[in-house]
Length: 426
Image (cartoon, rainbow, N blue to C red):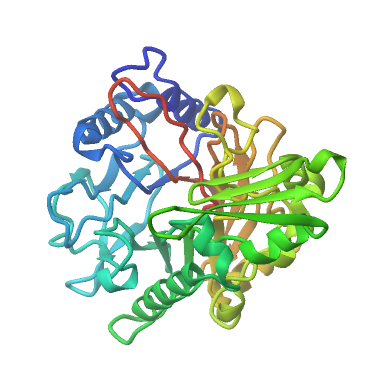
């Protein structure tokens, strides 16, 4: 994905528009994390450029109702999350409402509205940044969540855009099993679930999707990959802190199998994480276990979704910065899962879309209301690491479409190239 000023081909916008034209959805949701990328001060104006270009495209001309929420106020360290949620409603879609969290009632969606800078005063969403003491290692972070609530016919549901804390150091993640970072994410996710299920509002089915930053248990992965290797510890001379861990084969000229540093995870054969869709490593994916009563997920049958190369010409390769992991997920409440599993006429698929798209998801949701209607999700093509799902909403006697797109990283800094990572989405 290249920024809209420096990319004459407008690859990201073109790809999204192509998907819209191919699948003709009636409801499009685009969820973003890290809006503006790492250099958000210089890049935020290009995010606005992307949105305006999308709105003016031929593909979007039939979408007469738009809601765009971009947290661009990076000067407010207390509130800035760099999250963005965009919704596009087709002119033929009727009877759709959005919840006003201040008035505590649904309101009909009309017109096109774009909100940025200060989202705290916007009653149509809930946005919170995690408390600073959740991640004291960082001077300040951009992690948090945004919730919107929608009603199609008389069925209401929440869509939660989330970004949890990352692993700051591979060395620190390796030192303890489970790692200290796992505990931080657990605390933050618990905070979100408590907020969206408290007594302030009526409880409805919810889908939580985005960048959870869930990681494999680094200690256990290293023990599995390097079970017969010998470890060399390299320390910093001035502080005696561990700087590198080098694992070598006992024989074979003591070839280096794995080198671990703060921001380096260089394994000799990264293909093992793609073989059989990485099934071997699912045993080390355990961060969701403590939420088994509150969050549910379909079976994982796709390779780790992170960290794919930021070079679009090497989209199938992992970077050697972190241990590959399933950071991007579609999670749902028990009531939401019931809606998914009620559909028996079509198979549920939570996995790979095609060889050219590393991550995609297909599943069918069914909301039984009066009158009954169903929600069907199927994959749609997007560029390289982009993930798109289109959904077919059936409300007798007419069919409706719903497409949701979740963008993990939107880096629009001038003169740079940055892949957009796509997260599993509803």
